[in-house]
Length: 463
Image 1 (cartoon, one colour):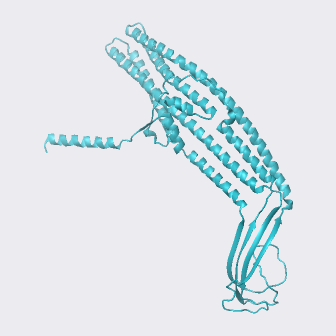
Image 2 (image 1 turned 60 degrees about the horizontal axis):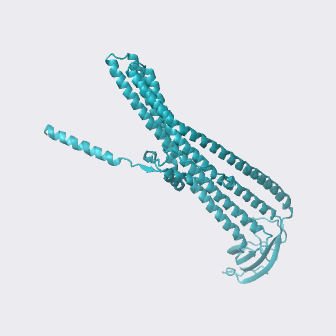
């Protein structure tokens, strides 16, 4: 095989391998902050957990309502048993089967067939409001779970938006750090050339090399923070970290000025959930208050039995007794009342009342904390706006200072330390400027979170 042919085959194999690698690359998905929040609401497991709790509470309401329906108990059985019967009493128990019929005065192990079939219908015509209280308690539990879903959705929305802003801030830090590395690299190459030409002392080259290493370390730290932020966002949106890229929308632009508005903290999802919990506890207390009442039941029963034994003690034999051929029915009205349950119910009511007072106090604490959180968010936003208005001035001044320091150094009027300090300052203020705008958006997110709805924030960030 000729050398040119082998060379051509090698090129073809290399191109094929490169094409396979290109085909195996994982496509990335670029998303906006609104898309990230919507994806989190669809995919984050906490939403599913809360939704299933709501479904379970709805089933609890249906269960409570079934208490209004009559109860029907039915039975059918056959048995083969002895017929010995004696006088005497047994305390209520579930071990020894009951037996009917006269006392025969015998102890005979001969057995006969027996059969039975029957049904009993029981209905509670009135209950002094107990069943309604149980339905109300189940309804209150469902309302609380629905409020919990709203609170969970808000928390996930805020956490996802915050993770998005953190990733964007980390990416901006990486971009600015890369610019710092490029400046340090250019300076190092220029100084090295002058040192090699013996126009500058070797100490200048050592200093520029140290500055270049420091900027590379800063870049590595920024890249690490970016990768961590991408992993955090990934857990919310359900996309593998290597595939996550973010579209900034308006988030790198100066945020719009918005006047501070009053907010009703009682309508915040956290406060609404806590208030729903208080209502649920009150509904449960109502159930206890209606528990110490007589229970009245209308009952009807119809049954039939068959036996292979006669009253004189003889046995019929064969299959006699397998057919329930003796019928009975009964209609009646009964009342039950647990006379000595009052002390236990009273103790439960005392405990439930204490729980209600505690949850009410917690509700008041929540509203107080929400008001304080709003005041803090407003103050943070005001401070972030002032900082964002000042950082462009710092960038402009640092850029000018860097140019002047470089010019002085090239003219032999300045030192390499002045140039290095100016470059380091420029990199830092560029990072501060990029983060300052994002800090305003983050403060706006905090303000929106205190209102319980971040949709207006998302609209401003993506339009």
